[in-house]
Image 1 (spheres, rainbow, N blue to C red):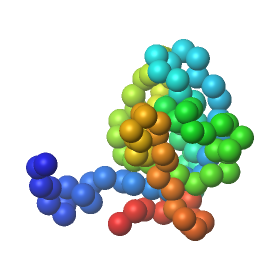
Image 2: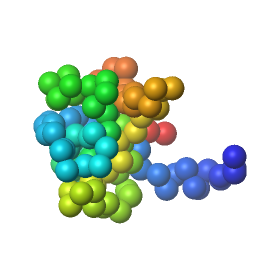
Image 3: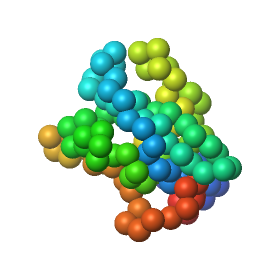
Image 4: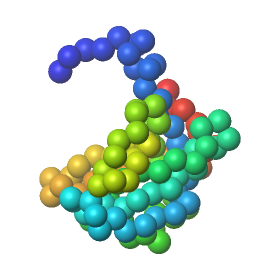
Length: 112
């Protein structure tokens, strides 16, 4: 593991947002959803492709807060512009467990 300095960490914009919509993403190479996430007035609404289909159903995700990196460049995935990187941990079976606050916080709050 290569150490980083505090200034490197400060460059990463890890923010909380609330999922407002979830769509299936059959064009993706691996099973995924298209998420619409509200990051509050400063950042606004962003979209993301997320490979979280093993543990989460669409109706379980809408209204859920999650943590995403919001300052990566947009990445096109099967023609879909994924604007943020939703964060999670992979279990031994490959299923992704989302990172989320344990209590509600304002959308757009920065992890520090």
